Image (cartoon, rainbow, N blue to C red; front, side, top):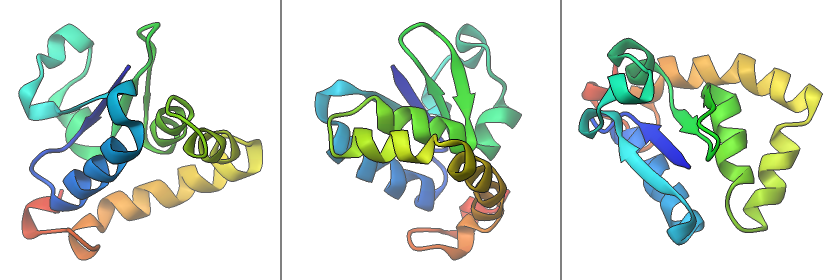
Length: 117
């Protein structure tokens, strides 16, 4: 499994580092700038605007769904958090909130002017 984030964004890097501490060796975490995106089947536009998660079966998810899948893939208690996030009402709300966070990441803790889309 692989979590793909925007390495130019301070907020995204802070979030990816938070995830890495919880995932331990269970997950691979890479900035999109260091990957062969064609090999993964993603574009710069896709990866610069949203976090992505590639599961062991090769399936891809982005945004709130990627966050839920990534959390489900690590040890508990975070796995439970991922399952809660994936509940129908919760994931619907998360899909509404995620773009608001992504569009304003330069204003969030760890954010920098480079985080502006």
